[in-house]
Every structure is written in structure tokens, then in C-alpha cells.
Image 1 (cartoon, rainbow, N blue to C red):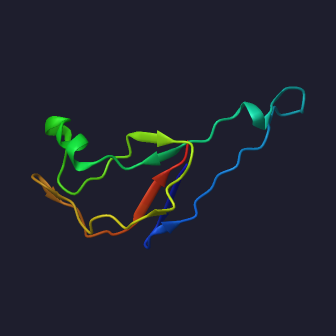
Image 2: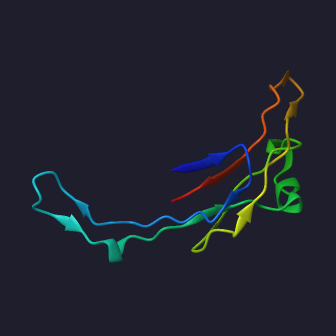
Length: 96
């Protein structure tokens, strides 16, 4: 799942419930489900990835059991060599 906002994300928390098969016969209990939050990687880590890295693009390659207390709004635009992406601004976090 992806959580997004045009302002900083604060207090994001996900809770899993039991997964029940249609008909109710089989179930995966909530205690067997792990929730993880995508964390933005540093610019140094992104630069190490070489040509697949684009200026202004924030990757969320790290996962953690706890969401950051606050995730700020990213860069208002991305400038790609082959196109200009419309100026969008927001904070985005993946929840696994």
C-alpha cells in the first residue's frame, strides 16, 4: 500500500488483522503478519546505484518495523533528460 499527502506525513501506523479465506475455513492470524514501512534512502546510497538514479528522485529502498515520526514533502519536480515531469509536490511512504 502507498500512503501519500501534499503535506508532510505524520503518525503513520498500519495494523494487520487476520487474513480469512472466503468461506472462513482457513486463516492466517494477525500474529503471523509483519508490517514494514518504506524509508527514503540517502542521496549517497542513490548515487552509488549509477545511471538508474535521477536528480530529485527519492527511493524507498530500506524497510523498518517503525514508520518515521515525520516524512517531509519531497522535491517539487523531477528533471529528466528526456522529459520534464509536471511539478508535483508531496510526501509518499510505502507500507508492506
